[in-house]
Length: 377
Image 1 (cartoon, rainbow, N blue to C red):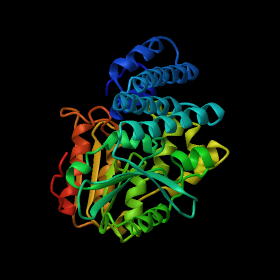
Image 2 (tube, rainbow, N blue to C red):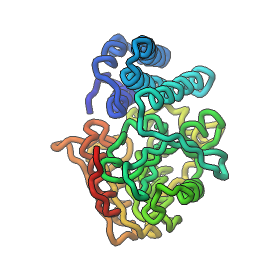
Image 3 (tube, one colour):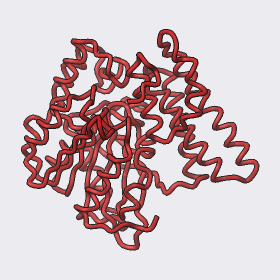
């Protein structure tokens, strides 16, 4: 992994994640270089990313005044990434909410001005409305669709940057979602995560079945990081899912968190406040108790659809052994485990050090299972 902050895994991981989502190395370096020396200061982190985003928004307005709508839209897209990257490290409160709303607003402007091949959708569910961005395939006939879940701290705006049109180029629609414990439901309505993710997934599929442009017989699900729990859990108990990919293997997330907390791990992606917030508890102790339910140990034998697990050999957030355990336990006849090594790159958590081979592999894998041909780019 590129250690932009030599002694700070959390911030370096966030730096790589922002690049993966579409950030500019030069812009990020200009604003973050002063933070490389000295002790990490969360307040300085938030201000740097907000300044970075603000600069892009100012230039976007100048582009817009000059009639350069696409250039303005792409600047707003980067601004959204920067707002979201700063927000991830800020504790819940007014500053975090303002930063998150700024990311939403910038993304909305990007969709309109660039314009992006994106449709905002809203899914009724037992947890209230679940928003998402549909990235439709450019096909005349109904297309297969892959539902894409984030994990512990990544919102749908960042998810869009991870995949953009990778699936579209293969004739597949992609739906990036905010779901319980993620994005708008958590940040704007305090809706925590839930272990039975087949419930929100069922609601998403109910919605997809109403669309004439979706082939409801070819619905897949994938998840990145903690989404490597959400997607397999959903597939195990939702037969309408025809293929599943875990971009980061999860086995027993409760056990992972017990170890993290006991050792006060320095290789976590966000500060400790995130666990009780996502779990909907008031204390770390209660969060650790609740997160024990997030296990696939007895779930994966129930998963029989085609399964792909992608993991990094040097993943320091979730041990590579967990990916092997998940693969061995899965009941799928068609299952693949792909471990990216240090020698080839992509060995870190969810391949943030070198993401292109992983996202291409995953999109290709779904295209093979769904029998799609490359679409016009």
